[in-house]
Amino acid sequence: MSEAQEKWAQRKIASHFSFRTKGHINVCSECGAKFDNGSNVKYVVCPECGARLEIHDTRKRTYSEKQVFSTLETVDDLQVQRIYMLHSGYRRGHKAEHEAVEIIRRWYDGDGNFAVEARHRSMNHYVDVFLYSTNIELKKDCYVYRTLADSYVAAGAKLLPYFRKRGVKGRFPNVSPDKLFNGLVTDPRIETLLKSGKIKDLAYFLDHMTELGKLWNSYKISMRKGYRISDISLWADLVQALEYCGRDIHNAHYICPDNLKEAHDYWTKRMAQAVEKERSRKELEKAMKREADFIRLKSKFFDLTISDGTIDIVVLDSIKAFKEEGETMHHCVFSNSYYDRPDSLVMSAQIEGKRIETIELSLTDMKILQSRAVCNGTSEYHDRIINLLNSNLHQIAKRNTA
Image (cartoon, rainbow, N blue to C red):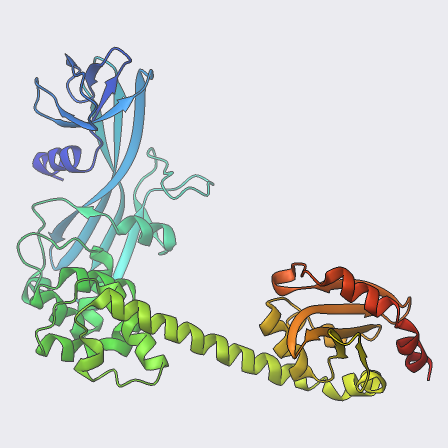
């Protein structure tokens, strides 16, 4: 790592802030200079060193942090990503102290082969805890090294001709070097994205390689149409929602909407409704396997109606009836399989066919367990429903013992 790269990391990666007291006295974390600033702003510029500082209203006198960054170099015919831990220490009234320690090296040969070297780590669940006194040695790759490899790359990257020919030129794009190198070796579509300059799209697909395969043809159509994708993640969600809803994802009318967010919201809502419909269908299909047992246990109550001339209390006589009751009343009488309770009788209190409350009665104790209106609430007819059912329990008891 060159001195210029270390300075870059200190300038771009490390935090720059001002310790501000209640008296509006600011102390620059970079040079230690003191200055007054009474305005209510989030950022100030140090008059001494010119650093742009985020204001921290704090009585703390010290602060420390760790940040990760990388450099890219070539060694013989190999590409190496060197990953550093930048330790920054701040003390009020003193210049900031920075130290960069190399922790990991990732080697690539341009043929898809790579190796990892790293210092030993302590037995700790944090990914950034390394033993700096140990040597950098060959290691088996793991999520810790891959996570830390996804870090900012310092200016002055040196690259193998293999990667330069595939579009990595000038300033290294703001993507994971590890994912980019592997992508360039294994998938020519990554090279196409890189050379097109669609860096945000490239970054998204590097993180969602399975989606690249599904969406690539649609993506190419949108590019040929000159469509500007303002948010690649919204666009990817839109195309997948369109496909789920049976729309042609190779039709520019659908995949190149004038208002991406509006189209995204509309079609993802349609997809959610379709998913719920399919889930509900499968749930009913599974429940219907229990219908024979339900009919065997409860059929003797099916033709029973209790009425006072206004309110009719009827027995739910099928699995579908439970499903309709649950969907209309927005409660769990179907989803929690009340039809599968041998000692319960579930009834619906209705007025002119409109459901008012759902009642669960214990067939063992002949006792009303619950009577729920929409969303498990209570209707204005609640007491009347309870009294009506209680006064006719003998009808249910008679059938129960038959």
